[in-house]
Each structure stands twice: as C-alpha cells, then as structure tokens.
Image (tube, rainbow, N blue to C red; front, side, top):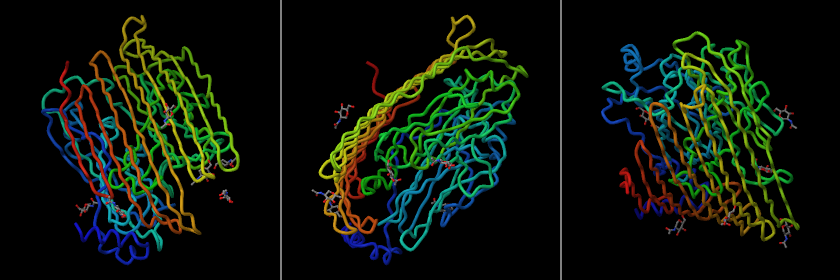
Length: 550
Ligand SMILES: *[C@@H]1O[C@H](CO)[C@@H](O)[C@H](O)[C@H]1NC(C)=O
Ligand SMILES: *[C@@H]1O[C@H](CO)[C@@H](O)[C@H](O)[C@H]1NC(C)=O
Ligand SMILES: *[C@@H]1O[C@H](CO)[C@@H](O)[C@H](O)[C@H]1NC(C)=O
Ligand SMILES: *[C@@H]1O[C@H](CO)[C@@H](O)[C@H](O)[C@H]1NC(C)=O
Ligand SMILES: *[C@@H]1O[C@H](CO)[C@@H](O)[C@H](O)[C@H]1NC(C)=O
Ligand SMILES: *[C@@H]1O[C@H](CO)[C@@H](O)[C@H](O)[C@H]1NC(C)=O
C-alpha cells in the first residue's frame, strides 16, 4: 500500500519518469456502473464463444480488425430445434493497455450492424483493464447468420502515447430450457439491416458528419415487401466539447431522414469520456455511458408504406450545429409477416414543425454568458396492413433543452448547467382504434453541471479545478397483448478534483467521485452506491433486491 502510493507520487512527478517506469506500472481496473445482465430464471448457459482477439497499435486511419463470424454451434442447434429459444445474448468486450494512452473511440460491427460502441480507458499512471457487457438479445436475427465481424479502434502510438490496446470480444448465450414464457414486448426483430459504411474502409463503419450542413446517407435497396414494423436504432459519438460557440450556443441534435423527410431526432446524453474535463475524475469509475454508449430508437413504422414500394430509399443523418466530427450510423430493425408475402401501408399524418432554438449571449471581454434553450416536437401516424390486420402506429417525440454557459474571472472559470428532457412514445392500435396492441413510453432527463477553474497559468503549465455532476433519470413503460414491463432508473455521478497539466500532458492530480445507481423494474432491481478517491475505492455497496410493495 505504502510502496504503491510512493510509486504513484513518483509517477505523478513527470511524464519522463512515467515512461521510464512503464514496465512496472501497477494495473488499475476501470469500470462503468451498470446493472448486471442476468438470464431469466431456469435458463441454461452460458455457451460462450470468442469472436475476436486483436491488438490496436497505430490503427487510426487504418482498416478495422476483422474476423469471420459463424453462429456458435449452440445457437445453430437451438435454431434447428425449432423456434428461437434464445433467452439472453451478451456481448463482452474486455481490454487492457500498458503505457500512456488517451481515450479513443471503438465500434463493433458484425455484418455491418453496430452492436457496441465505447471509449477506451485513459492509461497512465497505471496499466489499465476494463470490460463491458452489453445485452445484444435484440440482435438475435443478426447473430443467427454468418458474416464478417469488424472492430475499429482508432489508436495513435507515438513517443508520448505508447499504449497499445489489446481486446477480446466474447459472445455469451443463454437458452430457455422449457417453453419460453411470453416475453414482454417488443420481441426482437426478424431482420436487421445496417445503415452504415461498407467494407473495405480505412475507418470504422460509421459515417463521419463533419459540419452543420453535412448530411451522410446510405441507400437501402432491400426492405422486404412483407415488413410490418420498422425501428431505426441510431448510434452516435459526439465530440467531447462543452464549449459554446458564438451564434449557436452548445446545442446539438442528430436528425434522421428517409428520402430527405425528417422521421425523428435524437437529443443525446452528453457522454464524458475517460479523458474528459479532468481525467483523474474518471478513475476507476468511468463516466456514465462512456464504456458502452447508449443508442436511440426512432420508430419509423408510420413511414413503412413508402419503404414497401420495392424501390431504393435513402437514409440520412445530419447534426444541427455540428462543429466537430460526429460518428453516426444506424441499424434498421424490421419485423416480417411470416404469413404473408406482401404488406401495404401509408402515412396518415406527419407533424414536424422543426427546431426552436433561442441563444442569448452577453459578453464584456472574456467574461459573460450564453443562455440557450431549444425545443422540438415530432409526430407521425401511419397504417400497415398485414396478416395481423390493419394496424395504425403513432410515433411521437418531445424534446426540451436548457443550457447556460457562464465565463468569469477573465474567462478562467467556466460553469455549464444543462438539462435535456426527451420523451418518446409509440402507440399501435387496431383498425377500429379500440384495441391498443402496443404502447411504449420513454421519458429521459439528462442533467449536467460542470464547473472548471484554470489557475496558475505559467507558460505551458496550468492547474484546473473541476466539479462535475451528471446523470440519467429514465422511466420506461411498455404494454402489449403479451405483457407489461416497466423500469425506472436514477443514475447520478458527482466528481471533484484538480489536475496539473504541462505541455498538454497530465502530470498530476487528485479526484473524488461518487455514483449512485438505482434501478427498479418488472424484470428486476439493482442498487449501487460507490465512491472513489485518488484511484482507490472508498466504499462500494450493491443490492439486487427489489423494494417491498407497500
Ligand atoms: C484475452 O484472452 C487471452 C487468452 O485467453 C488472455 O490471455 C488475455 O489476457 C485476454 N486479454 C484481455 C484484455 O482480456
Ligand atoms: C462540410 O463537410 C462536407 C463533408 O466533409 C464538406 O464537403 C463541406 O465543404 C463542409 N462545409 C463547410 C461549410 O465546411
Ligand atoms: C470546441 O468548440 C469550439 C467552439 O464551439 C471550437 O472553437 C473548438 O475548436 C472545439 N474544440 C475541439 C477540441 O474541437
Ligand atoms: C485577461 O486575459 C487576457 C487573455 O488571456 C489577457 O491578455 C489579459 O491581460 C487578462 N486580463 C486581466 C485583467 O487579467
Ligand atoms: C441549473 O439550472 C436549473 C434550471 O435549468 C436550475 O434549476 C438549477 O438550480 C441550476 N443549478 C445550478 C447548480 O446552478
Ligand atoms: C491524492 O493524490 C495526490 C497526488 O497524487 C496527493 O497530493 C493527495 O494528498 C492525495 N490525497 C489523498 C486524500 O489521498
């Protein structure tokens, strides 16, 4: 204990000392607080398969690492046994790095559909390890087919950042042992079409949206003529930049279009990567969403009629006010009518009044503030006729955004206070409008508060004190003919600390962080309260029991 603290202090003295001691760095295991993925009671497994093992050295601007994907024998056997008895599929990424390295973004694409995106752990003054698991059950249709797996992690190795990331990707499958109970809606799609770049590429399979006028799109030729439901799942990485720009403030949104027509928007959670604001704050408890970035669903069933015409259609993405590169792609989840070759549909109504954005700024010299508020609403209703009858689906979204960005003390103090409020709902009814077949509601609130003060600036050296509070408050409810599910998540992180920077390198610092995660739902509960100081866990309490009903 004493010797490792001495070593840490030595390492903090200078980057040169760290480089010299590379070989003897202790290992720090980073983690993102999330609820554990538990298979349903009575299921068998896991049956695990290593999908890929790769090293990422000078990989920026280079082709992704690839491997042939074949469905594991247990999955093929289960499928041959009739029907899908897959209970849970988990994709596990585990990685390590020795030497100094900064946060990089990686993505995992089997057959071009992105299943996992994350940022890497900042490495130094420790060797680092982390692993992250994602529930990939909704991609069952994709996992059942052979394809090519691609993993891109754009790393740069030079005299300062010497770290090479080593990663293993493993699939764990669990199966129902008795006839499966009806799952809560919605069930996994029958087909997943990637809306992403095609290999070969010297990059990930995402599209790079570079500025506010850039629209990246892909033409899909093959929407099967018997689809009856369609959901576009959007993956994105935003530049880690909280700085407001004159004129448009700090507001950003992703807008999705089909043939140029808006089909929905994403107002993303601001993910803080492991190198964000003050890297010392995120060791070893990483920022919410950073190791497994959230994705966002846009139900495009109301527009399905147009996609069923047998013609090619263009799926596009743009970012309002983009100043830095955004990496965006999507997976189109399609449900197919197994009792019919052809479904038909049409749009009934479409209400997309566009973005309302108000930015006020007031500055005297370097001090002043930007105050930004924004809102958007969207709704579309359409019908689809299949062997299930004529179903009318309404997808609606309502967004609100408040941001104040204050600069004080001659611009050396910056205070950001931001709240994003996003609601979406899907309601599917039968032709008589009397029966609600599916109803899903999601309400998310993303608060963010960041205080930074830069002091002791002398030449290329300075210190930064920071306080950060961020979180996710999310309620989901889903009801259909087959069941009902509900979940409520309160996940909040607060961190404070300071760092010393010399020649753009972190040369010292201290940080304290605490995260409280509380999830209550029909499928289980999870509570965790964990705190760290200077790379050490102070306490870590967790509990999987659900609160007793009143
Ligand atoms: C990857 O798997 C190999 C073989 O099991 C193991 O030696 C290595 O430590 C693993 N690496 C990581 C980062 O998990
Ligand atoms: C925006 O990005 C696109 C694609 O990279 C580029 O062609 C275009 O010139 C850029 N426009 C501006 C105004 O920078
Ligand atoms: C962050 O955004 C500001 C303006 O909004 C821009 O001037 C700056 O270059 C950006 N920083 C990075 C690291 O991209
Ligand atoms: C404020 O900052 C600017 C630019 O960093 C500097 O030139 C100026 O001297 C500073 N003013 C004061 C009062 O410190
Ligand atoms: C942040 O802004 C919200 C209103 O948008 C306000 O209620 C809250 O008090 C502010 N928080 C701080 C710490 O200033
Ligand atoms: C945390 O580490 C910093 C430098 O590494 C040290 O100066 C500080 O005393 C430490 N704080 C505590 C509470 O251990």
